Image 1 (tube, helix red, strand yellow):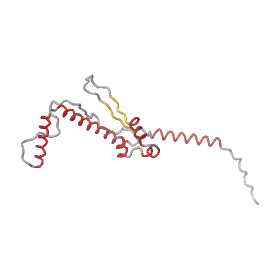
Image 2 (cartoon, rainbow, N blue to C red):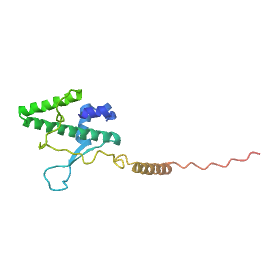
Image 3 (cartoon, rainbow, N blue to C red):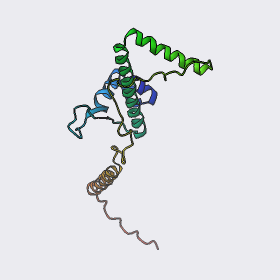
Image 4 (cartoon, one colour):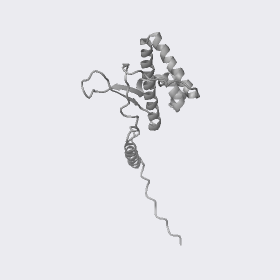
Amino acid sequence: MSFMMIDRFGLYRNELRKTRLDDVVDRMRLRDIRITPLERANRNKSYQPFEIQFSYPDRHRAQQVVQTLVTRFLDTNVYLTRAAFLKKQRPSDQIATMDAGIAVLEQRLGIAHTPAVRSGELPSGTRGNYLEVIDAPSLPSTPVFPNRAALMLTGLLSGFTVAIVIALLRRRSPPMPFPAQVA
């Protein structure tokens, strides 16, 4: 999945010129993507909040990567919940689910049929993992890097220091004699 995001969003172009793709993918997975558990607001053991962060110089691309990761988490959660539900079902329940799906398709095609159950929903009372996005991926209010004010101050001080050093080390040229007047 990391390669897909690197290719899709055009990430790490300079690094890919210098190093192998495997090294860039490892850097992305091990250094730039952080998934950290958060403190629970209450002591309820039924959930564990976590935060997904991605560090990248272009904050818009970083936001897109985080959105893609959140979407993948949600899709995987839905898939695993449905798979767990289907494993719990008996064959007769699976047939009933398939019949309901057929009824929905017939209804979409305009074929008269008895009212059907909406396809793809989990029956009520089915327990599974519940994943909820509390805060959508957002851009930072100020970029983490580069800190433009610090860079400008560093450049100003460096230039001033170099100018002073050059002025001190430069030899004083002897004074120019005043040109003699020609009569």
